[in-house]
Image (cartoon, rainbow, N blue to C red; front, top):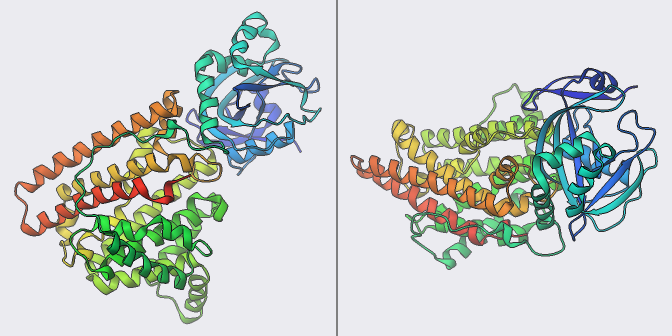
Length: 507
């Protein structure tokens, strides 16, 4: 059966599929990938396409190219094809995308939305002779001159890539892949610039330790993060609670904050981001749909209720969510419980959207990413500010436009800080796909170091918008609202301090 290719829009949205030969005969726009494998010295592995190829036979090109199958993640397809063509396995990092339309041999046309991946490997390939008749490691500095001297010996897409990005751009791909590839420490490229932030109000390590001690018993009882207790301990979720919620020193109330972040990170790790712990993009939506039943009781007839209970009790992530919501009910009014539930459900929607990006191999526009990040943020954790403080900000105040603006700007700033601190971890294969520095590096064709600074600039711009909105709101705020706004400011400062030191973001 002839291979089917995925047809896409100019923004890589899937529009259909068609047989491979028909796609190239008619020049239909389709999804593809190109792989650039470097050694640590920066040499690029080139392959000479086999003479049996139906187009561009015998021409020199980048390490490997191909097309994802229907339903296959693009990065997974790239890894598969690298093994099939060149007998190589290494971590791949997405470095760019390219939309191009070029005639090739035999009156065929390449019209591709090309996802470009880079990787580091110091081992020579074992090439499949049906795919590559020869290969060589080539110094990057020599490639532009070689293309200029004999352009007809290189594939159209390889020439287009060097025309588009230039030698410096391709060198940055090597630098980015090298910075993400063990062994060796994270390079200075991932350094987080100084971030504008409110003043930290409290550091009480003994209180943090007390909360962490209580949390570890709860984690063990729920079964989340099985066999990862030390990892949870060193992540310092109790310290997070101590730093963020400074209007109480009650460890039992602070435990609620630690339980919140532990339960939601379990959802993120096991369902959404980390394929090493069982995340499957195609299952994110169905899993989160079931998780709604852990947030609010579902009223079914008896036989179906028992089946639902079995499902909820068999998944530690769902056990953790249910246990967390039960703890919320110990401290919160019905209105506050509904608010907590609302923020989590909204986050689930954006998690499902992000899974669709992964599944379809789509890179979101920066505005699209930042818009969803406002909701896919720490808003569920921030919804506890008054609950943990022992008071209630009425729903009509909490959801009023002016208060909502302050709260969501604070949430956006803190999640951008999260993107900065988690970027080195998420550049690893199978752990996340999207963060602000990576998207900026891809869109601006810049180094990671520059993308980190651009991300920090965006963070600071959002933080100043938050401060201006808070100042305007404080002018006529009630004592209760002033207390809430002080809680938001404390939360923002505490979150940044936690990110600076938590082992969760160390690689």
